[in-house]
View 1 (cartoon, rainbow, N blue to C red):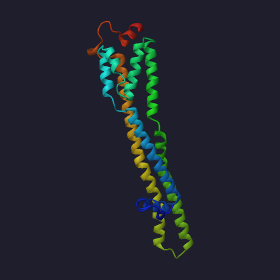
View 2: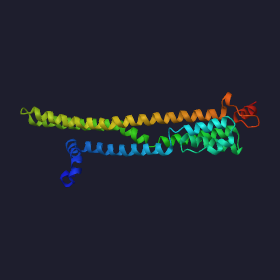
View 3: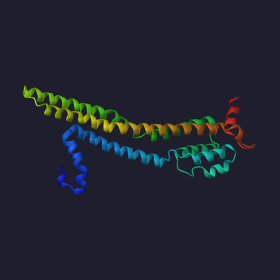
View 4: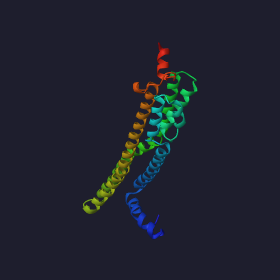
Length: 238
């Protein structure tokens, strides 16, 4: 693609990119495609986190406190009031406990399935991003090896009339692919690490919520007459 065929403002933007692709060859073009794919996947991941409501825990924790304190009807009215991963898990727990169908063990098993599915959804798109982070430096190194081979072949063909400047130019062009590969891999790896940390926090929040739902707190025990799932399960165990 010739930058002269583009409008002036686009030519100013794409000229350095086209020059870099022309200098680095097919390997740099491939890395450029991977960088565009990485950007698309990263944007999709951010949108997914926003839509799923990761990190939104305040409403779910308020509803959980209401449930543990025995205000079950109020909790049922407010559950699901805010779209979030934690809110969806709590809503599933509240509906399951309120229906009265099934034992506590069955409800625990069911909520474990729900949590695992939620976490699997949150981890989507991370595998291809991780693969790009791992393979981009290798692709860049492969381009460098090919460039070095070509540079030394040219040096061999020149015999005693080797121009050091030409050799140096061939070497820096060869090293360019490694630099581009690292430029793609480093931010991708950082983004994957950030996503992993956010998913781990969400998983920890799920575990805390489910544990508190079934065990409650001694100072927030349900009043007499309100069925407590944890104590009900313990009585059956004895």
